[in-house]
Length: 314
Image 1 (tube, helix red, strand yellow):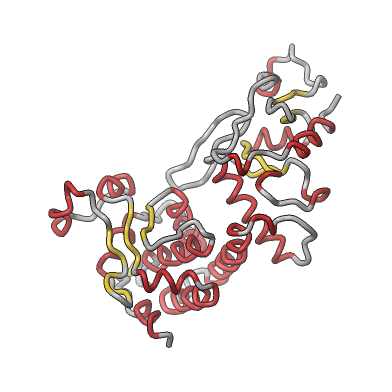
Image 2: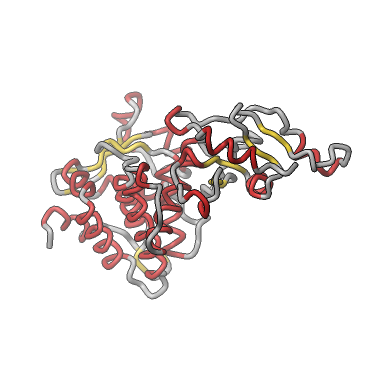
């Protein structure tokens, strides 16, 4: 046994419905995935939407359920565990409540937990282990085999999710690799997952056309990642070849009814009858500005926008 990883063998996980509870293992798996993707870059872990959404994904892959995930439970109780060099997880409480923290009860929601702390310190030695790709794989296998082996859990779905997440992490850290021919299905799945993650985060989960942004209480996103130049033609999964769009507008763009132009405005096909009330949701976009990514690094490629305009229905 890798000695620094031995702390993962002794988690106090409790029981749920006669089986080992998946909460702490799923949180640690989520943290490993986020470290591997480059989203978590220091031992100080932000309790942000991306980490919480990852936890929901893993909980659902494990149990087949999503709405009962309750991320506040492991985010709170993981502080009782020991890591290889000290506390495995140390919440960084707000100064105003730091002295009262030991007497505080378990928060009842993720919102209540974030009022107490929005960052926690992961054992620095464990953080360095999780940064290494092979040891991250070893840690994931250890957690799944030790705590998620019950026949009621979907081990096949867990490993499928982790394989995709860890494969896509290399692309998330190096998006320049997201272009060129795809050799196998596993590579395509990893690239697609990285494309989706990078595009949605770049647009802060907001539709580039309607400006709608909605995240459900169990962290599902309203928007989808849409290719500007279809992958079949471009072999390009870089975020600059993508937009975040609601499903209906993704469909409309793919069917060339609307197009973002190099002028960074939306254009509507003249084939859309503006005098039909049911078409209002399309033609109201005409001339509207695109919602652009938070970082200029991910702004849509001008040649890809030109391709879209050239293919707008006339």
